[in-house]
Image (cartoon, rainbow, N blue to C red; front, side, top):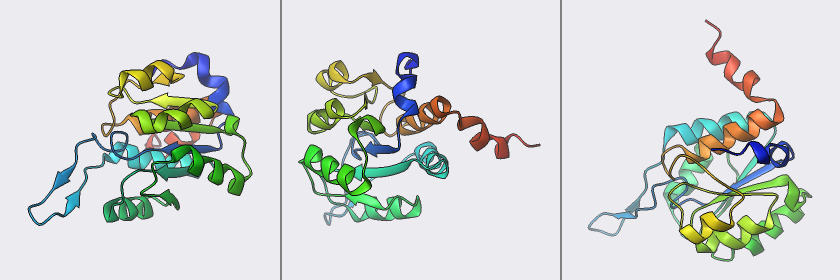
Length: 177
């Protein structure tokens, strides 16, 4: 992600908000014959969430679909701000900001499609994944190099940490030997 010009905005981020389908997954919907839905998440994104949270940055999920799998995955990652079945993402985002006493400038939002666009345009660091809708990419402040579901969220987490000077400390335990 070429976001050097956005490093100042990333340094102010205290909350990363992500969509799920198309951002934390590849956007395809999988159903079994009996109607059960399943999703594929990338472990790179999961570790990125954990590392970013260790620096004090909170993570929130706002998704238009409802899925037990999303609840389970976010619980496993320690993400406790999860809104599902909400197409009105900007309304939910404003509720979250009020609850956390944050300003839009303290928020990064990562999305991929038109329902994410109002939130992307509202926050200080509005981002799109590489395989996002062209209109969303046009209005986003930056676009990841990775596609949704393939490490795009990790890329954003690492960019935020690098901009805040916390990335090296998070990588240190893995470089110790």
